Image (cartoon, rainbow, N blue to C red):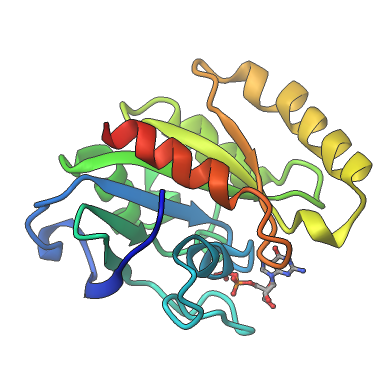
Amino acid sequence: MKINSAVYTTSATDLRSCPAGRLPEFAFIGRSNVGKSSLINLLTLRHGLAKVSETPGKTQLINFFTINGAWSLVDLPGYGFAKVAKHKRADFNEAVADFLEKRESLRHTFVLIDSRLPPQKIDVAFLEWLATTDAEFSLVFTKADKQSAGKTGASVARFQREVIERLPRRPEIFISSATSKLGRKEILAHIGRLLD
Ligand code: GDP
């Protein structure tokens, strides 16, 4: 998919204040600092589109971008700074949980995982919860350039073994790097297929 235009539309604090879902939506979510803003900028090739931040945990807004006038990219707040007590929906930010469970125009969600880390409790808890909803999702393992391909492969395999195989549904997996552009084509192709 070629990106011809990527335009910030609006931000919302909760499901109720989200704009009318005129276009199919593709959401991105992950722990703060996972590389979500960098991935959004990579996908759109607009480097200032999502703010890349050195101070994680600040953005609590749901941000909407219109891509090619054909679909919406939804930047969801990171979930790293919520208190976690197992599997409770409210632990991930009520607005995000609401959005993922009830947003009718939501077509697909990409859950970002840091490829360098062993499975993190909060990611596991989030995925276990997400798999209980009707939301369709896939996983993106980020920052692959920060280590060898072998290490990334081992990390993804471990995540598959310890987390994915235990989920009731098996998401597709992508590997990305904002510096080498790895994964860009594949993720956009996936979105393209879902739009067809
Ligand atoms: P967010 O909080 O999830 O939006 O994460 P950011 O996109 O702001 O990234 C957090 C930090 O990781 C920033 O310093 C980025 O430059 C860095 N980063 C993000 N993605 C990558 C990547 O693919 N490769 C490398 N080397 N650094 C990355």
